Amino acid sequence: MISTLLVANRGEIARRVFRTCRAAGIRTVAVHADPDAGAPHTREADAAVRLPGATPAETYLRGDLIVRAALAAGADAVHPGYGFLSENAGFARAVREAGLVWVGPPPEAIEAMASKTRAKRLLGIAPLDQVTAADLPVLVKAAAGGGGRGMRVVRRVEELDDALEAARAEAASAFGDGEVFVEPYVEGGRHVEVQILADGHGTVWTLGTRDCSLQRRHQKVIEEAPAPGLGAGLDAHIREFAVRAARAVSYVGAGTVEFLVDGDGRAHFLEMNTRLQVEHPVTEAVFGVDLVALQLRVAEGAALESAPPPARGHAIEARLYAEDPARDWAPQTGTLHRLAVPDGVRLDSGYDDGDTVGVHYDPMLAKVIAHAPTRAEALRKLAGALEAATIHGPVTNRDLLVRSLRHEEFAAARLDTGFYDRHLTALTTPAPDPWAPLAAALADACGRSRFGGWRNVGPGTQTRRYAVAGQEHEVRYRHTRAGLAADGVLVVHADPALVVLEVDSVRRRFAVARYGDRVHVNGTALTALPRFPDPVAELAPGSLVAPMPGTVVRVAPGLAPGAAVKAGEPLLWLEAMKMEHRVTAPVTGTLTALEAAVGRQVTEGTLLAVVSPT
Image (tube, rainbow, N blue to C red; front, side, top):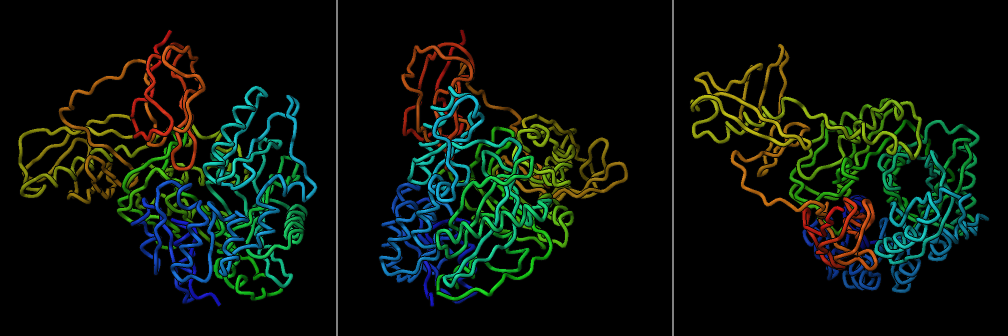
């Protein structure tokens, strides 16, 4: 029996495993990089071991340090979580050789399936070795790992070499393995997967299907179980294939077999993930099981029942990211002041109120999961919970998630991986509450009054300016003997945290929270602008600034001041939150300044280069 478990991971998945361990009476051990010294998973564990350094390569990808940490803390088992070393056969082998229980499949099974190229050959599927124009479009893909890292879609043969180089660099940074391969890219396909669980006694469960088609940058955003509209024949086929794949490598533990379903209803095998998936909560909700608890039981040698419990209802999960979908999904950093969702949905989060969202790791803040008797009810429940959630801090994809869940295509289960390619502009068009700036100004007026908002009888009309979704709004209000007033609205109540307005006989409540110059009014984020702005130095035309905090990881070969560049030409690459981001020339012209250098860490707005237009 496992008595002390180390989780070789961080954030949300570490906390998720700890939750099951606490219920089972198992002592927990966390590992942490220096930026995670005060992180929730570090605080929650019974013991925590420091991994010196900041980047994943220095810390969470160092299997030798993690094994030593487990032994030093007295752990007798290791759970890998997902990402990092979860599909690293060498790490699994090192854990076992140290006399520890490995909560995962045998190293030999990981070895067979962790490389997507070996997995395909094992199952009789060969990747593309030579790419011609007839093969396009194709997908360059990391042989190890997942999560959308190390992937590039190529639509022109001349772009293949650059895509291979970029994918290798990203895969090596994320997984410690730069091997990539090429496979056909199915346009408009559905991403469907089968959850499996196998014990060491020959039993293999398939716990239904999931649809994970809504993706950005090949990384899942919304997942659901069961996958709707597959049909009995296709459902049976992919389940049978999943069992065959598991038995082919004598699989033990939890895993996922993934497919791309084309427009003709044919399933193309993508890969087998030899670990728990980020989206496992939807399967747990539908089958009423704890997959982590089952992982632990299997690792202890217990046998599964002959069949899993029956499925019930429908579950949908949305990944809440600190990112701006309207700005090419740019990751965001800063303090997460408040994150709360209504009762009735499940929240799996890697952050607590007051934690800092940094630059070193994936920008996912949390997963929100809703379960209901039908798909339509689950959709409504999740969209409503996200809309009512309190999220104060960096910009997030919350509005995108709500609009996606309510989109007519998604509601009708017309699903494919091109959803955001078609609808992103419409889904990210700002629609702030028009009364939010006034509510913010009235709450601020109450907070600044010496005697309270209702007794401040200062002179005349007051003016406040706010930036909302990139646009400036000016609002006016008055102090009167009866209280605060504004044209076209009745101010029913105002204090620093709550404003109630009556507009056209309808009363509306506005919860207000302020953090410096950042103001949150219900679900609308505003930036308070100074009354008398300081002069700001203007950037020269053609300036490139960092769109986010990160590290310069590559500069275009031979790039130097004096070089001629074309508009849209990639000049350098930033790595932020485990993804590479291309910075391109804003205009055609001459590079007159280059401030970026490989290894330099930059903040958002840092000048990187200047291109003088021709």
